[in-house]
Amino acid sequence: MIFVLAANIIHYSFTKENDQVINRQKNFEQVLRSKEQQLQVLLEKVLNIKDTISTFQSIFPDLPPDLWQDQGIAILLYRNDSLVYWSDNNVPAENTPDKQLFFGPFMHYANGWFRVITEKDRNLKAIGLALVKSDFSYQNDYLINDFQKDYNLNANVQLDTIPGKINISANSGEFIFSLDYRNLHDTAFKTHLLVFAFFLLAFITLIILLFHLYQLFEYFRGKPLLLLLAFGFDAIFIRFELLYFEIQNFIY
Image (cartoon, rainbow, N blue to C red; front, top):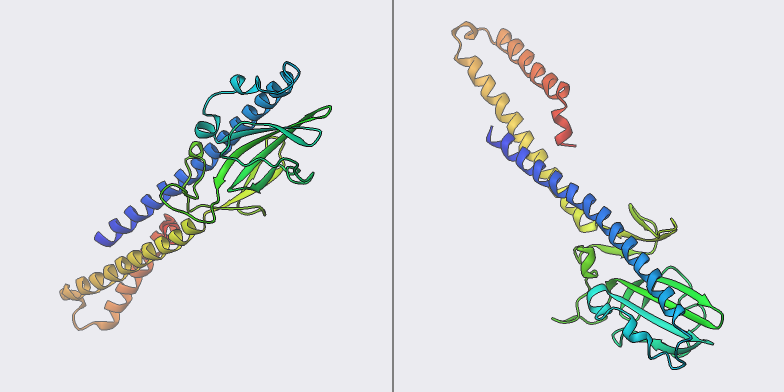
């Protein structure tokens, strides 16, 4: 019973953790949608106020304060492919970027992976960058390769630009990146192996106990063949119950 109880506790703990991962995936996509909408609103605002002052200095007060620190969002504005405005110095801005630099919906830029949204109006090009995960070549107490805080995702989760088991799409449905829970899968394998070992020990212990109980009956003494038949019948019956109630699903 101790082995069975331990196996069920481990199985329950992992199942609960797996459910949490699924919920975090949904939350991740919800946060991404929110940031996409926020970027769209900010870009439209920047382009709408573009004509108010030629130096573009009026844009800064109209954007939310601490946009980068709180939201992980940066705005770049180019006129005739020349930089005229950037919202935060934490994200380096190219004065004359390559035309393919911000072409895709998702990219590695500077020290991170960003969701990219671009809007154009005549000779102006507004670029919105929403940080998904930092990617510093060197880490310390202040520079950490972690997901943007709103995603609430463990830093050990890997991000890849090719489709995987957990694919993340843009609001338009276009694939942008995948999440790799490789460490979680390793944990899952170890957990299932441990559960299997506990159930196997419990089954063997039960069979041994059953065999010894049969030996205690006076009726079976001196009748080894009958004892083996009765014992075999009960062992098969126990195995049938395991199959019938799908208890083996905990193991596989």
